[in-house]
Length: 451
Image (cartoon, rainbow, N blue to C red; front, side):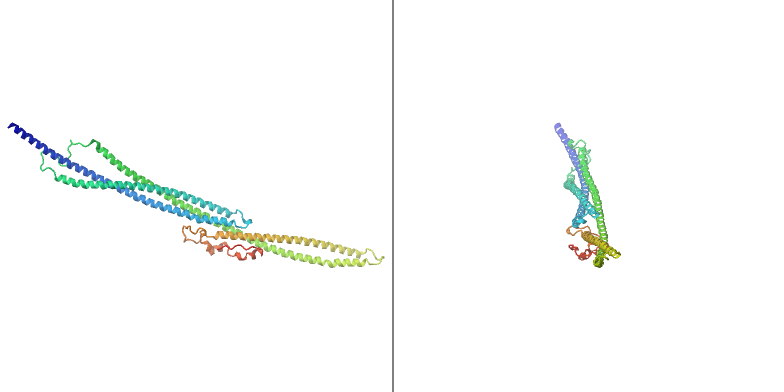
């Protein structure tokens, strides 16, 4: 009897302990569900925030790449735009080598063309170096964009898993809550509370896991900041590229304007020399005509001395036939002798004058030929410089684009057909068909250059 009562008491105490354990287990389970759900919600929110930040950084990087690629295209266009100018400069230098030999001097126009060539080549070199730097920056941005997108992919995949876990945990939490014990044991734990005597695994301490999550956030922030630094660097590079393009364009325009002014000055100077040569040719021809007239008068005067010379000789011959008594040196004989000596001296002087006149005439003719040759060379050099000044920049490189093809007036491309400019350069009255009339019949015809 007593043993039966003891057994009943032990059974009752065991039932109480079991009920208490049931409630504690259920409450702890609910508490763990709450903690897990809160951790998952925080993880999902943090991951979403990190992904949003990284996506904004990826979009910004992609925008920077596009802007930098556009800057690269502008550099490439500026680099190619210098090709027609360089070809024109080289063509001008080659064309001026075909000037007449005596005109092949290293004049200021030649120096300006050489300076233009070196300036254009230097600008292309600078643009090429900028293109290399820009290409390296684009590759760096693309690598960083790939790194950001790779991290986004990883975080998006992890976010999807955490969201799935969150939904699964929520459903499981509801199920566990519905399957709780039927009755409440007096003195039991509060529902959802975790008993203090049930500890966690020391290897998964809250401090350690928080540190890992903090490192994850820090790494994402570092990745975003490094991308921002590269974007800032690319922006600075784009600004430098724009400034370089403008500087190179200004330098190219300035040297082109100096070259055109130099060629125009050379043409004006050549025209002035040609005008003086034409005046000198006219004066020389006038002197030649005057010398020829003088020589004709001298020959006439020489012929005019034949009559007094013959008369004096005849008189002297007649007087030698006088009688012996009358054959003496009288005043008449003296006058006849003086007349003969005078006419002889005058004849010698006229012959000397005639010889000097012939020498002067030969010298004038030689001088005239030299003036004609000089005028011919000056005219040939004038046409060469005129071709250089009015030649199209894209004539030899038609496939090379210009910065603004529509804006041709007042530029090298438009001046070729600009009659106002041709009138200002005073070239239209020098036709290649009438060069023979300018310098004489011996003036060779220059090859006609297509205008």
